[in-house]
Length: 481
Ligand code: LFR
Image: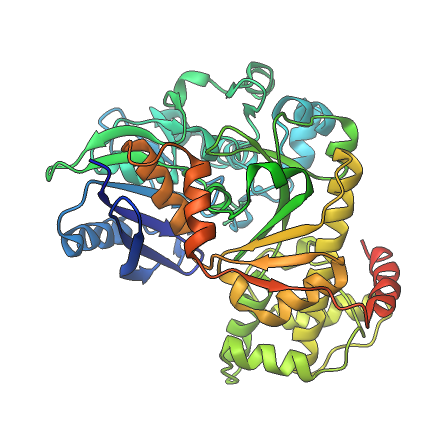
């Protein structure tokens, strides 16, 4: 049969969601049937995943879903849990925003220089990556790591806790800084350099592998465990346009990249901080991690804490009303990663770089918006320089497409046509990969075509009016990096 009902679980920075989709052989309809909090908890001094509560929510969603053919999980990259010999979770998995990896990059470089590590793994060197989390764990709680029979990435962990075979799905494994993107296997050199044992990891499998069955008969599918790769699978772009197309997966993080046939592992690429991640369609997602809407989300939280509760729409309005192109930050400066009082840290950045200090919430927001748009331009220039590609179109995917100010600024600042949508890219990618695994769709390409035909995609044309001002701003911005 070419019809199916699937359940997509997507775990984001503040909430988790279950989306039920029905494909009737021609049309796809979908709805969110369950939404729940996914807020990190404090445990033994660490910021952690609340797996126990999340598992209950997963079961609630499964109850609500009624009959369905399969389910799949996606989450952000890099995080993992540890299982004992009986398959029980040994401790709450630690969240990548925990400070445990502070200083780990320097220590790691002593064993293998950053450029060499990059040449083996192709990941932008970031302290959040699994490798550095494992080094931190080994130093801070060696017994726990010793006791662990198996290390599972979060989406594979949720699946295993529902009874699926333990696996390491490749898209999520490729965020670890331990996988060789040329072979899709663990890098023996990297594991050896850090004294890590490959048999601690479950077998690597391709995106879209069936790994188990629930009591109700539904299949468990290792989709693309990495949310960014689900989003990229839902990019409404035709294959022949790939050369001129960049994408921006725009949520808590901004992942800006382009699809390649083979990884780029050169020193240049390393210096530019570009990652090679494995896509569900077998392509390389060559991209840069940019801190993204986190800056807005976390600032909003701080204003709320101060008794000034603004909606995202209000913040967007205030940014629009504020004076343009006044002060900028490097959005990816390390002080903006950890939760806390971001507006004050942004003001401090402006003060120490000799720029006007944004005082109002609107001015702070304006500074964030413009700095993100400028950083996108910077990433696009780096991508162009390393790949030799000339981009004309930027596909913006995910929740960020709702932010019209950001989309228009991005078009204006980068001088590219922005095609914004689908807003539910991550869930749609998860769904499409399940449909393909069930044999209902032939390929990711077919899924993308379906999305291009049925989803709302809004086009933003770059305005030529203020391009000169953006250019001048860009020159100033680059001195801050
Ligand atoms: C986006 C994302 C990024 C990854 C970051 C941390 O949600 O998955 O791709 O770099 O989160 O894991």
